[in-house]
Image (cartoon, rainbow, N blue to C red):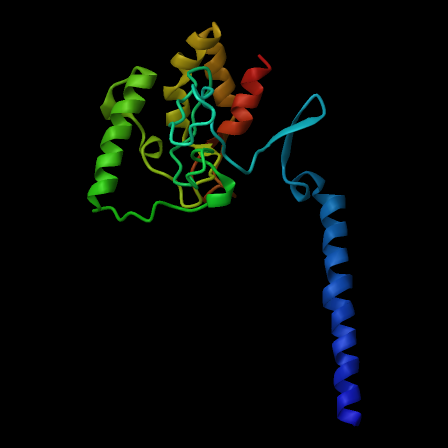
Length: 207
């Protein structure tokens, strides 16, 4: 009987500590010290949340037929485009569907991947008006999550001329905007330099 009571007391103590006290402490520290990150790293426009800097999204033209879930989204030339995404649940939302986060799971030797890369290279080169040989790798391959908001500086700079022309802005002005959004490697040695497309397009809209 004593063993059962001891076990019950331990259960109650650890329930309070790990199930109530610890979550409240972590939430409190997060809200006080990292409020922006703890609340989803939201991007706001006039006080209204419009996106999260942690999640990539489509920057596409409106569908010709909104009821046709099979219609492919067309990239909008006015905006910097993200890398391809395999996160598509097939419900009409298109790529970057957060309900279908994941990779394509195609190996480097898979003919389907080889063909998709070939098609993407031709499409991106035509869209941005550049030589297919200069299209960066991240413009051709999807990320592991399918929701990556970052692209390489090379891919961002490749799109400057198209975006500037679509907005009637000087190329140099748009190029400076991209330069301001280039983030260095984490801790100086982790990963690579990158540009957050969601944040970049938000600031572009404010020009």
